[in-house]
Image 1 (tube, one colour):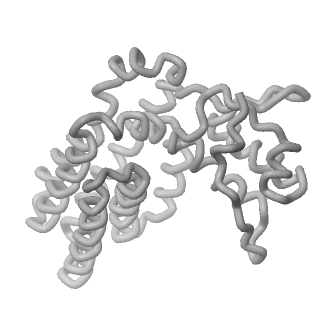
Image 2 (tube, rainbow, N blue to C red; image 1 turned 180 degrees about the vertical axis):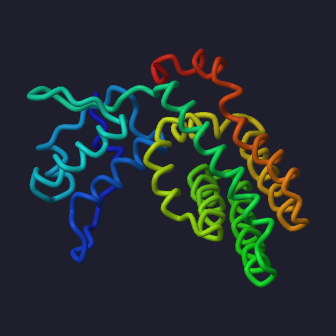
Length: 234
């Protein structure tokens, strides 16, 4: 299966190295479920597609392999992996543990920092609401990620965001598969509103309850998703 036609044309930023840019483009295409499991990623074809040599392509594929988003068969092929439920559950556990503590920190922020954060989170929810009518899955997903990243930044644990993102490829793929389901997008935005309301009130227990509800949303439908997407989930 060849999915090059689904890959974005990448205009390289010449001030940055090529490999990280290729990695980011391929990762986004995999995580956003544009590239299906089993899609073959050949170095020569990717090099031609992106207009670069094979060396940065190789480096990007190695990084994708480290995140288990591709299966690399030496001297043969590299293919997009199926979604690993164990990896998804582990990432979900890690994210929940981190963000519960983050919410406690945010509830205790000094007034100026707290007020500024509430404004930023409100802005992100506005972007999410704008993506609902008509539903734009990509825009909603971007605003969802930005909402959570704002909290990591405000809690001054931005490095943990990078760690979590590296572990979250499989659970993010599940979320993207489930996002078009009826009512799912609206539920995500409502969960964010509930988290924001609790943070505004500096109510840490309510914020934690809203977060747990939010993060449990996709994984609670895993059995159904395995039936709907048998070729996607290992």
